[in-house]
Image (cartoon, rainbow, N blue to C red):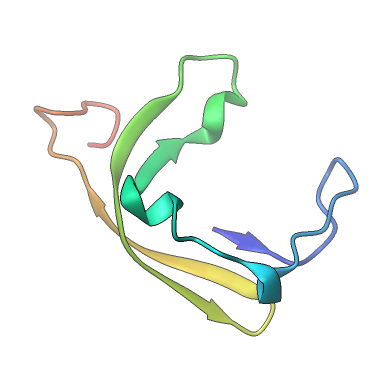
Length: 72
């Protein structure tokens, strides 16, 4: 999902300070976060987050094709 590397805007995500409590109350897995100019679409649900080294990983359950054709 993310790393602690410098992103295209020059920001750095400090994974050691991550508090996902609020995110996990409604853990939507989004398609491109609207970066493409298209509407933001939920394509699944994050079941688990895990930090390993300098990276944040997510276990995701994708939505069914009936619920989200984009997820298919």
